[in-house]
Length: 119
Image (cartoon, rainbow, N blue to C red; front, top):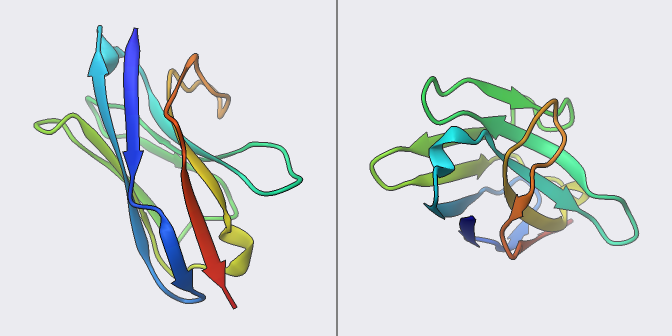
């Protein structure tokens, strides 16, 4: 079992920045590819970015490339999502996930954190 706890959401103006954090714990969590997904009101949950613990290899959705950066701190067992140049379309609940494969979510989810970007 893997436990994930997100933090860092909030309200920001368009063009601003936020950093989300996901603290991981539990059994063998470092064997999982970690990722972020988001779900806007009335829309399906979508892939945002992913990273593996050991090599730090990253993958991004086209909609966030060049604006968002996913990273991990192995000493703190934490994955981050730095979000810059935020747009109103980035408004959503953001979820940390463990077990990402081919931009599809794995079995472990955090509780989510809300991000609201005002125009």
